[in-house]
Length: 249
Length: 262
Image (cartoon, rainbow over all chains, first blue to last red; front, side, top):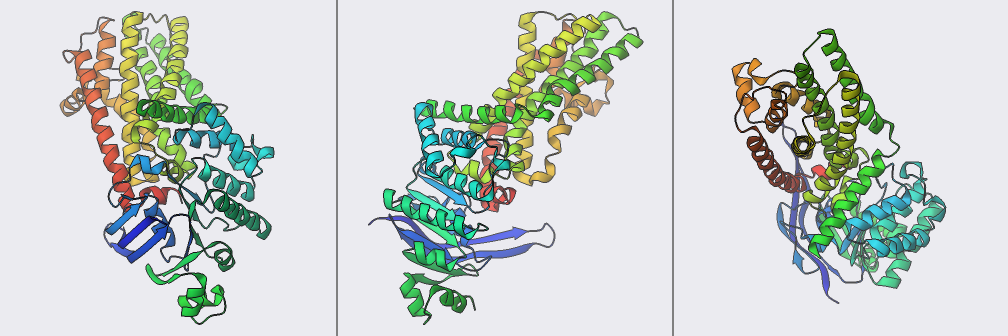
């Protein structure tokens, strides 16, 4: 198995304010290696730095210090466009251009990933069908239910058949039955494509169900890294929820 | 292959702007209502003042230019603002897009809307106020200059938004009015105080207006209007593309794009 993501000694600090400058150390000395085809979980309390790390891995944020390689290419200072065609991301509470319908949104994003002509129409149809969006394909984004918005976000994140998929709290705020269906979709996609998936979540059940390895982050630092059994052993806990409480304390 | 990808992404942004504009009441107001109301008020004022037909042409040129320019530059500004309002900018820039794709794609729709405004305002100007155009070629050259100026202003708005966030979005609607004031919307620029005349010399719109008005018998304040206008506008556009690239890199460092998506 080759490494698709390598992060070495990554630091990120956010500054705010003009006169009274405030500094927030979002990430401190992060070292992670993620293998091709695994589902890797980033767990941690609110404000731990999970999303910041995911944004660095997706090239949307630059680290202040350290080095990051994605699919063998260093992205510490520059994210090559070619690399962007090989990754994608789905966030919880997603946002899309509001006046575009489901179909139009998927077409727009297909075009952005250079999928055009009959390939675009095929891809749009495929993902509308895969996520059960047929009945709302002509519905504007701002008129969709929360569940359908999340389905559209997942459909969009697969439109370019990415090698790495980042999922940032993909089931946050969803009803349990919809969250379950989303988790099932993620597992199915992973089984069918062997895509590398990096997932951030608050829900321990989700991490237990999906993730092969987990990194627990708190205050911008990695507190534990390994399989769920390694983490339970490390914290002497019987399940991930107890391990989470132990590590958050 | 590379140029095909570029064209596909330009088409993507043109497609998105088209969907936004289609059936949008505000887009209708931008194209029809505000420019026509502006033209009618100015045209009626010229009647009240009983102006000579060349002076009427001088003033109406300003009103037409204002309408066309505003609509064209708004579409370019919207290339970022639509994403910011819908908080989807993070999704867009996650994809392999460059500043050229979203700016040029949006500009295409801006030019189409600008041309529509030009045709509508020309019709009203000719029918109601006896405005006669100096010729097709001259009008095409003038319109090209206005479209490029619209691109330049829209890019400047995008640059400000990328650097300072949504709080500066008001520039999308106010910048054209400010520029028209300095460039001699309804008067020759030498009526302005000296420092503003110097500023006007560095704004391409001044030269395009002077070029067009020269066909109604008004001598330009500055020489070589057309050459200066095109050289300046192309220089600013190249500079703005470079600055936009820098601003995008800067926003990746500060997290501005992510903040605009929250």
